[in-house]
Image (cartoon, rainbow, N blue to C red; front, side, top):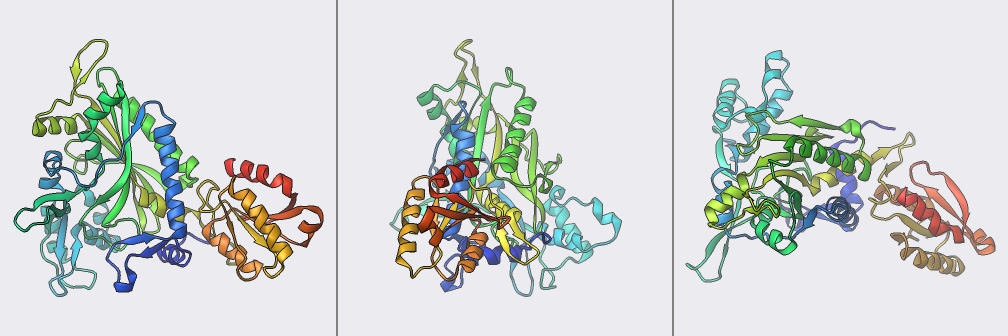
Length: 466
């Protein structure tokens, strides 16, 4: 097998095979924005469905919701996003392009050989400390030009509700999905009669007006999050025990459900300087992307900060009444929060393989693959073969997610299906017409076996669910 793929390898395959496209490319695109093509939409849906199944449906202590993208703007005042949701930005004094100061410093540090620089943890630096470092070592833009001192820039997207000039109301595109969970806490509690501990989860779009660093899908203006707020009584539940259980389930989802190599994963604890002021403990589950280790999934013990903030700003009671003691408490929260687009990028990077003959394929778990099987007639101009292939395809379609492919020669069909990650290719040939058997080709090994048509569905179902 080849070494790990580059980001260029992955993005090239993603565009060539219809996983992702630069958005509105016919107009020159939009920075840090991508659309999901036919294969990407299928893969993305599979990832979301597996997350929802594992974290919402399969747990009897979880409830799912789907909140609005536009919330009352006071939501973001209460959460602290209006005052402190910022990135440190610098501007190239020559080109006037803007960059994240922390990204410039990280890239500069990678080129340094002096051991004294190894002690610098960029995530621990304040904006003022970044400014001092940039000035002291003359850190420049990617074009080699001097930059302005960094300033904090709020990354919430602003928009307005109302059509008449002068009557518009300022609102924000949500910067995270979590706040929709907190503002719905009381309604979920009243409508479900949930008892602590319990969680509320959702998958949805979020938006951040941030300067990105050209890392493909990793950081975008519009992205999708899968967030959970798990509420509990700190007097009855040990937060550290709950925290570890969630860490275990998070790791199991990535390694077992998504099939990612555990060697490419690590837990990283936030330092006191990096950790948010409302968090008592935060860990990131990092993945080794082609550009290095970076956050895939975060988990934080947020105490009772969020509910208290919304109680203070809304004037509404968000307390929980213990059904046994009738004591009123404000629940504490553990929050596992992931980016679905980062899951997607991780899966592409981790499954990308190239064998010694140069064949590229995606080693996707069958449940994750856009298609689990592909049906081919050996020749497309032979009606007896195409009719039989179509018949088998229609039968399979009801049981296994299947595609039909008769384009080009069969070798090219195999290579195409390999590159989109289809685990099994089924070929209908002249022997099929004689004895009702067919060949099944396995993606990773390219080995073929002949089985009876009557055995095909149970065989594929067994392989897909193994």
